[in-house]
Image 1 (tube, rainbow, N blue to C red):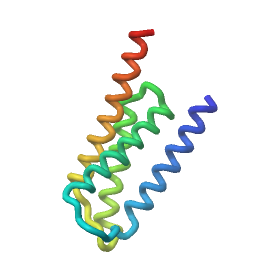
Image 2 (cartoon, helix red, strand yellow):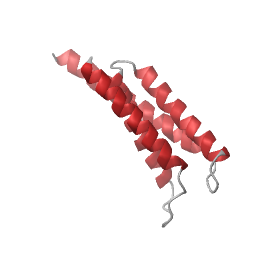
Image 3 (cartoon, rainbow, N blue to C red):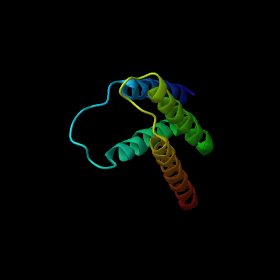
Image 4 (tube, one colour):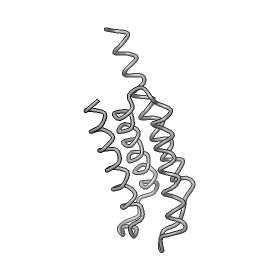
Length: 116
């Protein structure tokens, strides 16, 4: 119970920090093709992992919560932030990262249970 409460606190903190970063002005620097999609997949994949720490064995919830956060972030970027635009492909990268993370955890847990 205490572990899950700490995990939920970490999840909420991560969600707020990620939202803050996503709604801040876009960083400048060299443009590396598709790097932003990889970063989206990694960041929202980590969110799914934190969801699974808060709600063990709730894989669909982990992907749903991460995807909902990613979609809401894209809408806010397109409507609230000057210099940022919404990108549906960013949201797809969020969903893909969350799904891959949840699938890997599910696979690892099933494998561990079958060998125990």
